[in-house]
Length: 123
Length: 108
Image 1: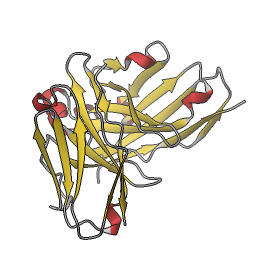
Image 2: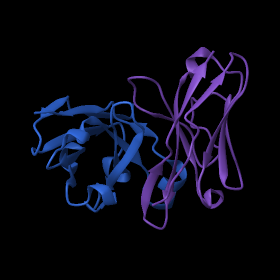
Image 3: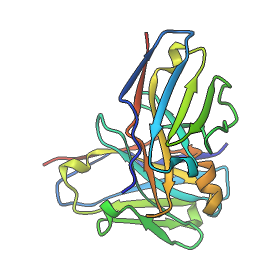
């Protein structure tokens, strides 16, 4: 079955970086963009950006420009999201979600999500 | 940046109908998706492209749009429908995806 499995919880100090992985299975990895969405404790969903696993092209939300890097390894069907210069307000659950590319993605939404990775930033 | 506004909470008795709204400028020309999120779980897509349902989503969930407001309707509400619901669109101006502020549905 189609599945996105994310890496485990992380605890980081302010100023450090974190890299979260998202392993896809059950479908053609390069056939869907991978989006990243985060949710701070008690807050709503916040879109961070996407990566095109086929080309490696990315599109980041303005808020995270300069701090986020999304990459992929097609040989193991895994996408990565790295966030640097962590602050306490980066404490959140980070999700990956797949979306069809182009117009189809706009029309069909995020149809499969990972289970989430909790990142805690604390001194 | 593009903003989607949802009421913070909606309360509904079992068996009744819940109507959740999502307001945004020119939302009428955008494709609206709705996600259900239960506590401690990842979001689940329940309606896409305004009014279509993914396979496995009950017919009790339906979407519609009128003017600058999209609506998710949950008919014959059940206790298991208690969750947070988020609308989402793609903003063509910024090429960014945007989520609404979310509505917490409480089943009385």
